[in-house]
Length: 78
Image 1 (tube, rainbow, N blue to C red):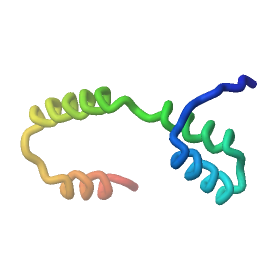
Image 2: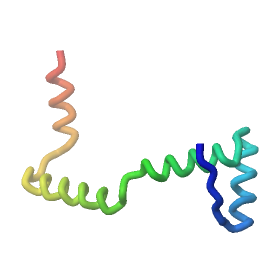
Image 3: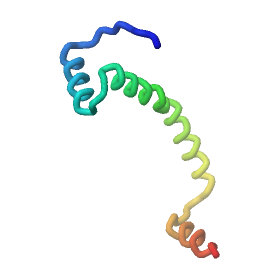
Image 4: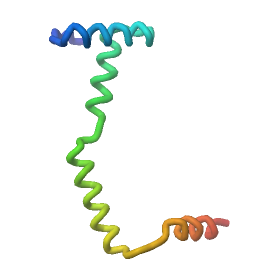
């Protein structure tokens, strides 16, 4: 395990420490969790591109009523 030295504003460190106490964990544990979650988040630009691709695909589908599709799917089940 590596140790790192970081600089953060005093007010933020106080919030980190308070949250760590509330969760009954350590400052390091809370920061590691927060960093892990941030790194796992999808890139906003990649999400925007995926939404644009989906929008282009649905334009080709033409108009439809989603409720009709759901009913058809439900009614086709045994």
